[in-house]
Length: 296
Image (cartoon, rainbow, N blue to C red; front, side, top):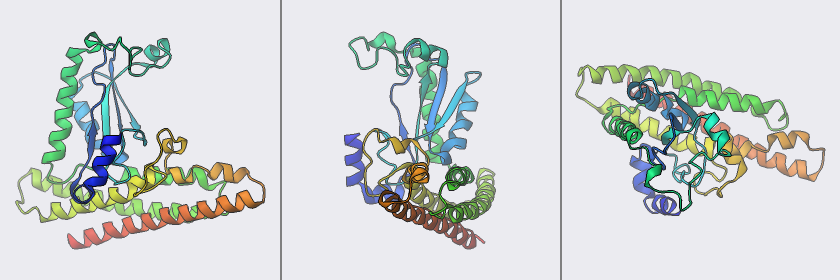
């Protein structure tokens, strides 16, 4: 929390240029957990679930979109994160008042017997696989079609009650970004296959693709997951952080307000946030288009 925020602020230039992803390891292999649970930014989902399918065997696994919390200090910077570990089943959670890290968490009962050493071996294998793939992939294993889908879904959901904000145009921008992301994905897959088959030792194309992907995340992660944006830091436990595009969290409230000063003020803020989102989606589409032109 404090330490990772300090680290980001004071290593900004290096991280902005080179950081690929953030792997959070916290509370692995709690005794009694039986399934695998991961939380990540959408662009990482396909990558890490591939490793999970490969290494977890028949163990069930689940995913949720990572949201801003005390351990997500890299969201403003625009670095996607992954947190994954063993988890209790829904039935087990109900028996312990939803104590998702064990009834003993942060108590004097949190002793060594609360660790499942056999399951820990699976954790270590998966963490190693995540890191190995991130560090050795010639072309980063990210995909942005699903990111575009998440923006489209959320903007579509909100636009019905936002006639005065102009979200329909933002949806159009999100759809145009998705079309570009589909082209980027096709080209990236082609180059992944070429490198895997050792058809090319020239990594110039990979460098161009990786730069594009990092810049996409630098722009989209703060929009999808923060209220304060790139250079702020959301307070811990801030409710809008749990939603996709937190800056638009108040659209449903706006839709219910009667005409008056409160509605006018909120509308002005939401229009500006809408404009920021629309601009970012346009910029991301153009970034992809420029990258693909450079590769042809």
